[in-house]
Image 1 (tube, rainbow, N blue to C red):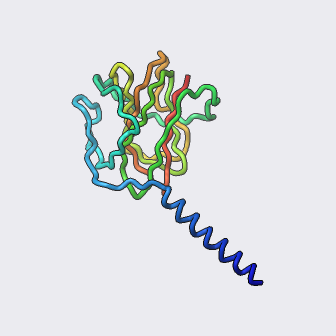
Image 2: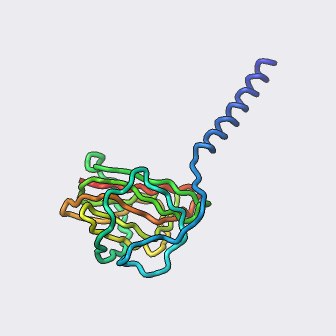
Image 3: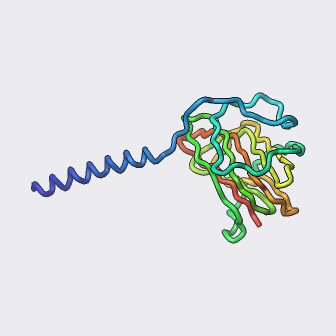
Length: 186
């Protein structure tokens, strides 16, 4: 009987320690909020949100030089995920509802023909995505600060096989934890 009691206490303590480690691992970005910084010629003219800026893991190689005409996001849902062999790059960021708006950059440095955006784990309110190509051409996709449910969406097609340097996204989680993943296709 004592063994069962000791075993039960050990199991409960291990579960508590595991839960505390899991909470510690979950990154919460907090800090001062700033108005979204954009360059001259940025095509969206509405007031932009105050954000927590997340520094990219690697410094971006190309700065926006020329803004192409803004593309309104069409919310085209991809019926079936593309085959794994057609995905040449994939990366994402998790955002929490309590951090409100986040401004983050994903370094891509890959050539492809299309970019998909996957909203996972919950709903996300997205302001815009700024896709910067290797020559400095910058395509801004305007989401209009709308809320999108989980799903895989077509973000941008560039059939000429352009090389994407990076994509910058300004978004807010509307659920406890949401992940935004970008994918570049062959």
